[in-house]
Image 1 (cartoon, helix red, strand yellow):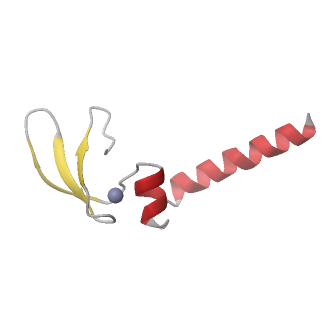
Image 2: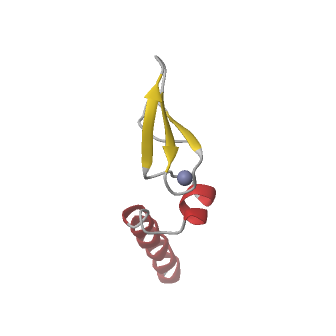
Length: 70
Ligand SMILES: [Zn+2]
């Protein structure tokens, strides 16, 4: 049980660190693996969504209603 708690806390700490440090992590990790496009240059929007371009990977992304880029 103690080992399980230990592994769980390691995973939680890693996730929190990944969220805080996602600006500094390599693009293959944040963009390709996690699907986070943190530094997005907005270049327009239609009535439904916001269009932008990820500065890290250069991919065209859109903002959903929650404000997340995909
Ligand atoms: Zn990206």
